Length: 47
Image 1 (tube, rainbow, N blue to C red):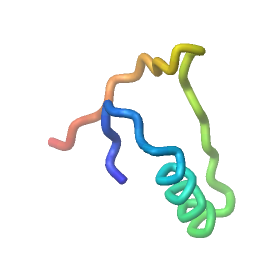
Image 2 (cartoon, one colour):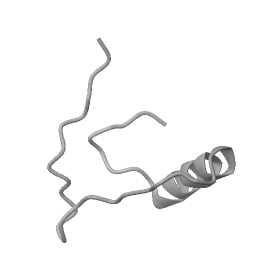
Image 3 (cartoon, rainbow, N blue to C red):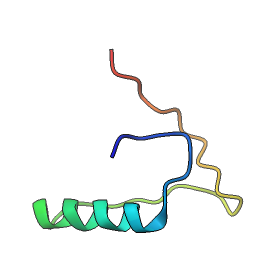
């Protein structure tokens, strides 16, 4: 699931995180957003 500026359905996010955890059980998942749901992060664009 590529990063997009639009919110993703929670079920899709949960599914992707479960897949990543199965692949790498030591993965760190960090949620960064304020109470309004803004993340203030610039998304990297492939070059």
